[in-house]
Length: 83
Image (tube, rainbow, N blue to C red):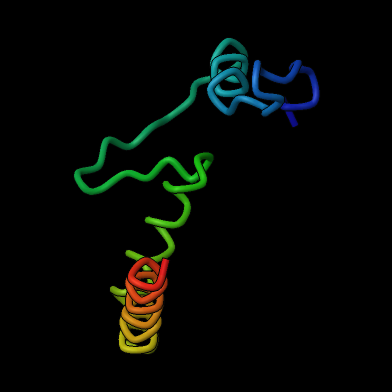
């Protein structure tokens, strides 16, 4: 629970990197360098992108998500045309 000793960052968030650095001072910290897409889920758009991409990869959610996004897009286009 190293996050308990840290002050919040400029945006009021706890910074994971600060906690990892402190842990690394006390013991070895292991990491894994992977190849693939990374998402900043601390950012609103990053969280949405990660959620949509994950849902599109799943067979049990893919079609529903595609249909939903199409409907949202069509409603947005129609609203713009009416304005």
